Length: 327
Image (cartoon, rainbow, N blue to C red; front, top):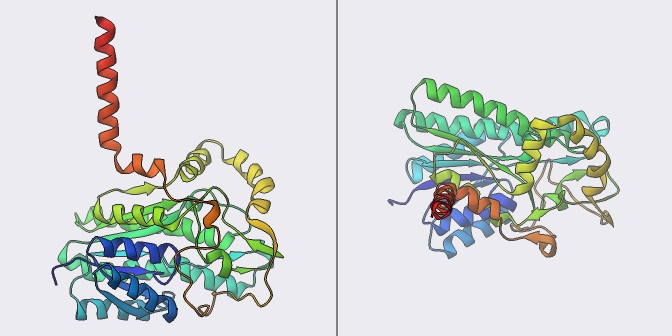
């Protein structure tokens, strides 16, 4: 019972599912939070297959009472929560004026308020102990919004603003609770098969695309290292930096490229279901349908994780070169 304990929201599929596996592989006991029982049960089996323990907690993260009850059950059955990963999300592929207001509210409540309620539930238990880590799973879209996903982009930007505010409060209190945010690139997850859409063609991630295990590695790193923020993948770095330098130019580039880039040429399949209000039955796993086009690693992530060693090696190389030039 000495294994560290982590709560992962959105754990039934996609990046949350991959993160649960990654943390379990390091010996963490993983509390699995999501709505879909089929995916939660499959995630439990994967956690147990690597020799760890799982606790299945069917929860709608948009409901504060359900989130707090999930946290209470984890501590009652296992003990103090060491880390909390807010990954649950919902998206809508549609131009803003065509989105039903109730749908917009729902996507915002899941993606933004889900992270708020998860953070609140974690802090209620971590602050008295003065320890713990909260990882917000963000996106480059928290900095650089794109067309056709206004609810998701707005929610991720809101999470970033919320996180910065709460982090400053923790610093003011001299708290040892650590709050971090991981800003991701585009990933091959089931969200593009079950996200609500009003478009005629099947959604896809805006390329280049990475496998969810890349994001899972970054989440594990963020949960075990004190970084304020963690950018993952060169596309995320490029989008965030370019937004700071040339925001107007990016507005125009995305207006011309991001429509086509977010859809394939395939028509929506007949009877397609979305998960905005109810989970789609079945186990959908961590991967989406883009395995053949997705990258299983990221040089930028490796450099980011090893930046001190890389910097030291670079300085050593430059020093050796400078010495050799003097001879």
